[in-house]
Image 1 (cartoon, rainbow, N blue to C red):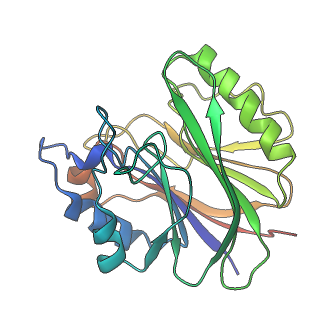
Image 2: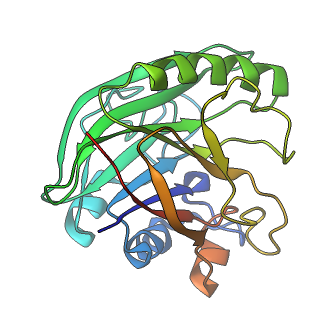
Length: 232
C-alpha cells in the first residue's frame, strides 16, 4: 500500500487572475486525493499574519484535519505561512516547528504521522528562502533533524530552487525528487516544488496536479508522490 503526500503553495489564495478565492484552493485540495498535504502561504503576509485560507472551510468542506502545529499569530492558520493537513483518522504526534537561518524569517514543520495503521513516517514541510546561500544553510538544519527523526523521514514543499543540481549539497545520504514543472501555474517551467526522501521511504509514483481550476487558483501547481516501504 502507498501513502499519497502532496505539497501546495496556495499563494495566499490569490489566483492568477488576481482574485483572492479560498474556495478554488479548497477544490484543488479535495481533487488531490492525498493522505497528507503540506501547504505554503496559507496566511497573509503582513501584520499579525491572519489566515488567508479559513480553517472553517477546511473543517466543513474537506475530509482533512489541520495538524496541531505552531502558528505565527492567534489568527494564523500556519507557521511562517505553512500548515499540514492530514486525512481524518490518521495519527499524528511528535510535532514541532524548526526555525531556519537566513535573511528573511523562514521555518519548517515536522510531524510524525501514521495513515490507516501503516508504519509511521516523519514529514518535514518546508518553504525555503529566495537566496541559495540561505537555502543551503536551511537544508543543513533540516538535514540534521531528518537524520535524528523518530521515523523514516520525508521532506516536501516549495524549495525555491531553479537548478537541477545546485543548492542541495547538504543532503548527503538523501534523495531529491522533482515531480515536474509546477511554476508558474499558467505555463509551468520551474521545478520549485520537490520532495526529499531518506532511508526507508521509496517513491513509487509522483507528478504535478494540473487542471483548469489549479491553473487559476494559485501561481503554483501542487505536486504529489505515492510513497511506500515506510519502515518503522
